Length: 96
Image (tube, rainbow, N blue to C red; front, side, top):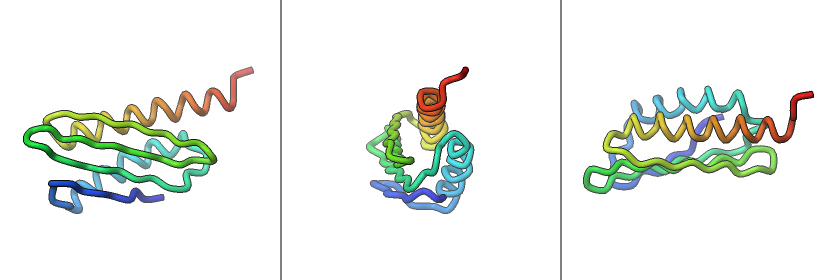
């Protein structure tokens, strides 16, 4: 599954898309049937912001972050979403 992108005040480049898709593939391991994913990337002065929303098997997972570097922002938002997906997975499949 690929991400849908929205760019605000930033040039949409293939490098950014490839980086985000590569990081998102690691997150999808923890998701159960992800149906759609949308990431919004915006730049205001020196603040780079990323907001990621994933619809997965009736659940909605969201993560957002803001730093001064776009790639760092993408990494951190993916880490947050991965942690949320792991928590969701543990809630639905508790260890026995």
